[in-house]
Length: 207
Image (cartoon, rainbow, N blue to C red):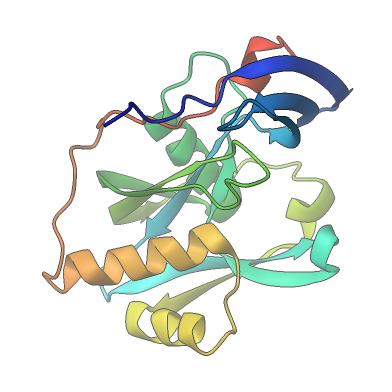
């Protein structure tokens, strides 16, 4: 049996570099030797948090998302845009900035590649418990200046996913994973388990 095809890149061209993404076009060699264009959106990667309180309610935010031109119910989340920062620290910072909460119990849920046919973006999602209120930083701007915060029973949040009321990909994955773990249907990986698909290309550009 011959080894699987490696899909080498014959040529790569950067088409655009912005604040939070880059677009490149790769010439990828297919089985049989033909090269085909594949457009790739490079992303810094992100984290999201299923923050669960003592009443099994998950903290959710309602935030405007311009590509869909409406507000979505989502988990607290943020980009891995601080060089060298541990993803757990990023998640903790985002939880505080967006909700005014801190957690003393952190565990890993899932890693999500939302659009692997178009982008290298992956999102690592954590479960945070033992929540306490802390001072939320002032001066939020842009979309974050308009977000609303709510606490929803985890079972109700899962029902909203299945009803099509929650459509953000990492939020859906995080809620379903948390429900599976807390129900005993699944076990978790170590908090700092290897993140095989964590994006690196955009950060390497030094933006």
